[in-house]
Amino acid sequence: MDVKSTKELGSPDYWNKRYNKGAESEQATYEWFRTFEKLRFFFEKELPNASLEPRILHLGCGDSTLPADLANLQYRNQISVDFSDVVIKQMQSKHPDLEWRVDDVRKLGLDSSSIDIAIDKGTLDAMLYGSQWDPPRRFKPMSGNTLTKSPEY
Image (cartoon, rainbow, N blue to C red; front, top):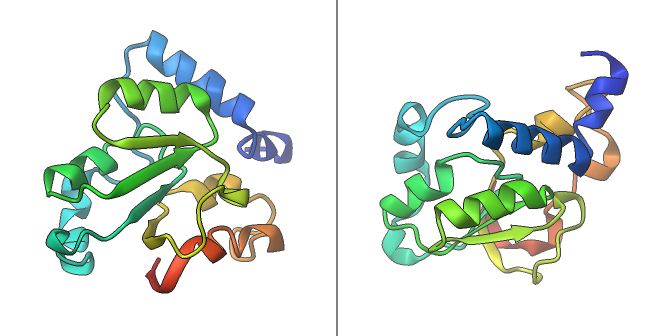
């Protein structure tokens, strides 16, 4: 991708067009990295027991099945955010029992210390332009004050 294209990844307009196009093609979802089944072992090992009701934040959820997959494992206290209103509407329609919110991970509108676990399955990668090993300073504290005092990220 050229620099102009990578900068577009940080724009809701780019993603709204992409998710509208995906809806037109009846594409179910697009998992950027791995499917839930390929990552399940990791989540089962690393997440606290669902009975503890940890508050899980999905940063830039897109149309990933991860929130629904975790809900199937009884993780019911989740919030999924994305700055694409198109994908949030699509996901609300698919999974009305889960919490979806249009929000920008760069300036989250969540209460301070309200999240136990933040999951980023590819958002930072999409927002990085320049060196992938040294993200722009404004992205480093992305979820900062919304996490509890002993968060998992």
